[in-house]
Image (cartoon, rainbow, N blue to C red; front, side, top):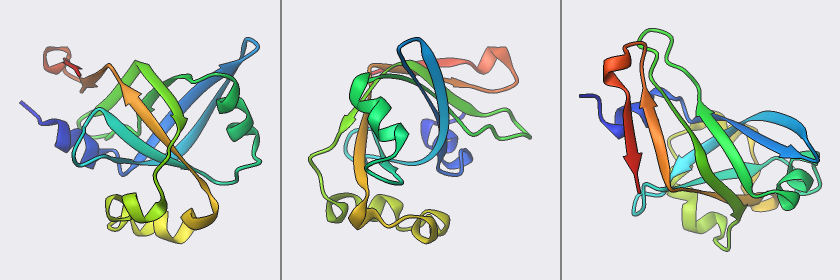
Length: 138
């Protein structure tokens, strides 16, 4: 069986984040990192605290996610049992989570961006093989 960490690694650190405000859906690609002490918590950064994404998230903490798909195996993580809210942590608290992601480091300026936390009650690990589907409850 493929481990949760293999799915995280296979995502390339990218997740599609879906929100909806006033019945208007929106999907964005964002970088994420998993809390090493609590696998039910992921961190993401907003590019700009004044962006439409940030404004939308302030109106509705209920989101859905699917990670980038590994095209060879179909590995992906998805969930609609997740909430998102601003984090009280600072960049220095989560810096090590993103340290190995050179694309994130080049594209972001975390010291001036807003950090969010995704909190999962469950998520689904899937591949192209339906028999490998696995639900993780937290």
